[in-house]
Length: 159
Image 1 (cartoon, rainbow, N blue to C red):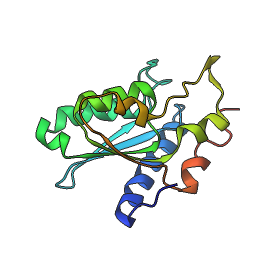
Image 2: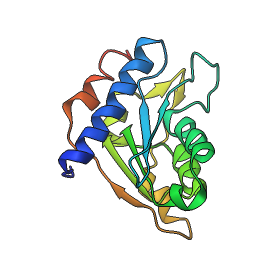
Image 3: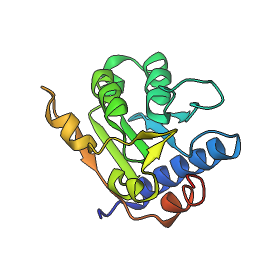
């Protein structure tokens, strides 16, 4: 587990609140935000179920929105905060967006303790650090950050 500053913990709590909102509307419990250096916040919720989009993960959704809202230099200087460690697909989207810093609360390995398969498809056991390590530009990763709410938002959902 990694420590986070009070400000970073607040951003992670915001992401977890979005995960709860996604769950409450019938989607998978994941939420993400991109925070620009000037404090602007772009939000993303999972939309896999409500939009019938298997790529509608919170991180891919927030990357799309942030890329529309922020220029490339601002995006590169921004941080993506997310309730749960990005999967391999999301890590690829983050990498290609130019975002160079990710902070997450609940680890992919922790999630696999709760979810062995989604709709019968086994989960990918591939930490985002490994995906980012294959790229030509560094992406700083901070996490997992121990926040009980990050686990709680998943409890009972995947049964």
